[in-house]
Image (tube, rainbow, N blue to C red; front, side, top):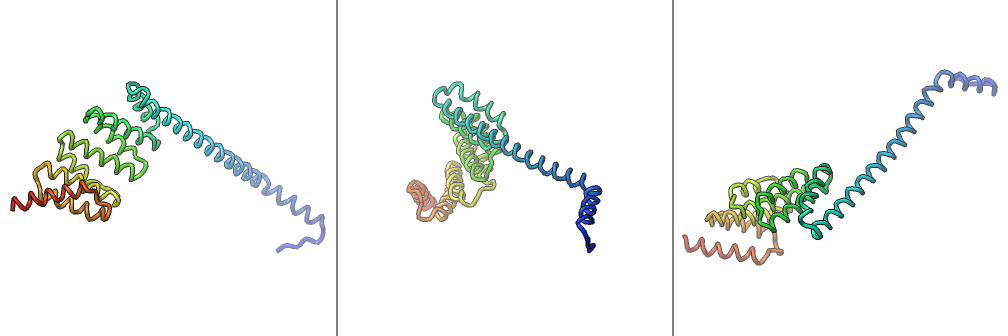
Length: 212
């Protein structure tokens, strides 16, 4: 390591270092500082955009009860304008609920498929898929409902999936399959078994015994 004997030598060494490397150091600092400022502005703009989307979603939800006729068109426009937002899926779920209340099964199915496609998490996707299967049952599309239910679901939704499968099999007159599905649902629900589910299972047990 080089040793400097006097302050003058130290100063000259520093000068020499800056002559060689000063521009690069300054450029690096400027770029780094600019990047920091740019990141801060980006994060601020992103937060502002998220807040604006949230405000729009809240306003749209209010519109659903105050002006149902205008709500559908505005909600569909909101989904198109905010396709990458988690609110798009939630809005599609709301549109599906509105369609179900009017027994518009085709529209409900369309909105639920949108909700599945734009879901930001597996939980929202699973909820939309379960509702889609129920809509398909109402539309007497039983095979399509089973296809929907045979998709991928988080483990926490297994009991719900099996309950709806049991309903489909029951409507198809496949009592043993329906009973097996209900039994799986009961096993996965544990102590939280719905009395209605237990009743479905017991009724099918009686039917199966009579057939045998």
